[in-house]
Image (cartoon, rainbow, N blue to C red; front, side):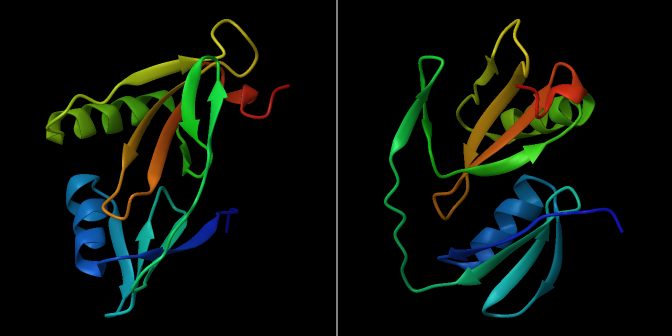
Length: 137
């Protein structure tokens, strides 16, 4: 088995969360019950656990003149898969999703887009110009 990450996050509504990740983004739903669900996020285990309330007080930060949320998660995917996800999200979105190139002409140049899920989490989908520069300094 290759290495994969697992993250567990509180959510407000299991069914809305399942609908967003499976129907809107096209990911598979794994094990689930009325209190939690596993989502297959590019072979990584994303678990949502029902919580009556939660609050993430998180500041934003500046990166190359853009303001980004310090609390976000996402995946690094190949260019073809990234483009397919970007087209799907833009096709199904009522508002245009912006893509942004970071570190232009530098080590680690990558393209990202950000979306919010029904729980308020920000997801980042990114692909690198050169795949061997994911951890380049």
